[in-house]
Image (cartoon, rainbow, N blue to C red; front, top):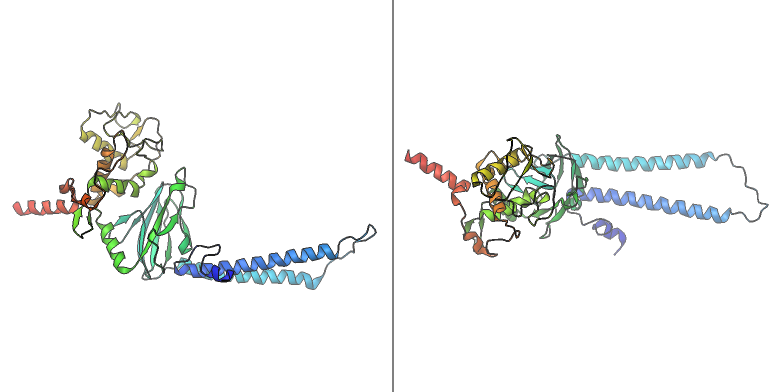
Length: 383
């Protein structure tokens, strides 16, 4: 197998290609690499030829005085000019395609924050990994809630910055089904100490699997067990999922390790003092009621600057839009608090069985959105 064939398959210097953009990008890459290699070899060959042919053979050799050579000067000016114009042409043509999405593309909102990506789909579902359908154009609307980030998908040959207070976009048509683990996604702008952990994956799925994934992300409170039976998902398990999905894991450890924010290990119902508080003298004690702790967490995710834990800086962005507003968002925060409560002084250990029976546990079913809607409907009928 030739190097050119390997290059075309994306296995020589480049990862395997999996989108419509990859074909053009790889062709441009191979052409520019070929031109560069050709002229590098030519220049080195001529240089070595001149070094040998015109070397000084004796101390009496005199270097001839050559002022210029007009044809040669024209040649080495025009040839690079035309090569440069050719590279500009293929690059600009690729840029136009790269920046002009298909009119029938599905729009997915992408939010970056320290240090995670969050994907929101047209059906309102949210996930920390990206799900796309094979052969369907996708536009990713990109924005950042804090600092400069970047989203890079090597298999799709696409990358763009996520800029605070500005929206950018990238688009692509996923053409090749992803492996089970998905294609990697990286942040390529240094965004702080958690930059190296800011990565996720994109799953390219066939239509049936994609539709199933959209149902799952739209209602994370329910799932199906191995027998296909629908079950409520325990709040603690949901909280662990949201802890990772919303980026809490980037700043708050669950094993006592130091981080940008306080560790969650043993945090609930512990002694917590503050270097600043909007309520003078405010502190949290093990004897304080749950209502006080719940109010503190709810305020902290929406307005983290209101109370600053001692020995920590005010660097947490607001998560008000992610957790407040709708019943579903409120229940996500309730699930995270359930997970936080479950982390004792020994660290996190899953309290549910590691098999399909875990879904038979119904923790606080009345708090799930569908149950709340049913209760509301029943109350209305009883009036």
